[in-house]
Image 1 (cartoon, helix red, strand yellow):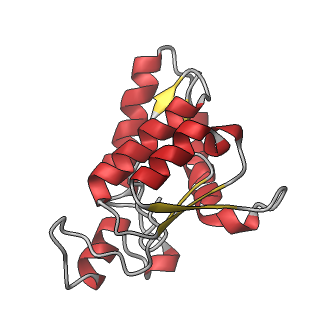
Image 2 (image 1 turned 180 degrees about the vertical axis):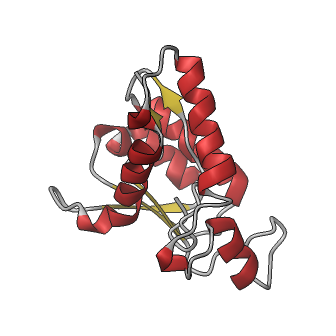
Length: 161
């Protein structure tokens, strides 16, 4: 999640919670945002985020790794709120007979609804995409200039059974 706009910029799904899952989500975020040096990548202290492969990938992308204190959900409130919305709006509404069905539904939720149409009170009742379009005027080569260069994740990687 880009903490400036609340836009989900990297995500992945798998039937496991190994480090590769969050690295896949990180790779998507880095490819989409092309973060500037010293952008902060904030997470909780889950084993996926403390893994060597994840921290090495963060460093190679020029990201500064930040982790919340143990047992403190407040520094990850934005991503925790997102996960609650994802579960309430989509995951818990029905059974998912196949992983492919769940993956397609999560893709549509994130890319078509959450980022483009879901309004946020924190963003003046704009969607993350509309908020970025309305507030970012001096764009760089990637089309995005981070005003507040922080990405956060408790798990940007959605986990489906």
